[in-house]
Length: 114
Image (cartoon, rainbow, N blue to C red; front, top):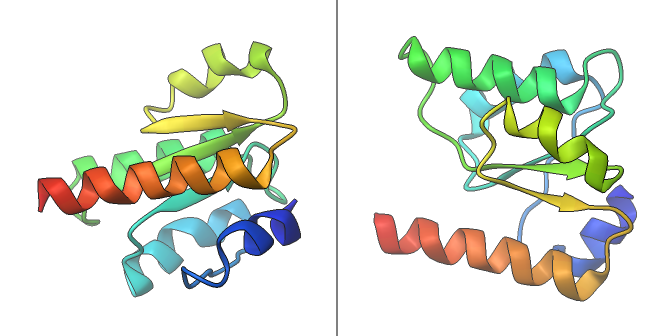
């Protein structure tokens, strides 16, 4: 999955990987990414839980707001994912074209809002 995403966007965007959901908040705090893609299943802490942790840190003022997209396994995961307040999601299987289009759209809206 990660290799597919890197193949779709790697030449245009710098990508940082984490293997554990618990690493998401500290990495976001350290590198301040333009866009965060979280897989529904990240090591010991799922993408939904990691997204919730990021949103809690943002609400507490300890983290700048992030644009977060979740990578979901199936359409049925949308309900659960929406509870974590992501900015959007992609449903697997992903195509390089749809992944790149979604990322570029998210980054373009970020640029417009700045």
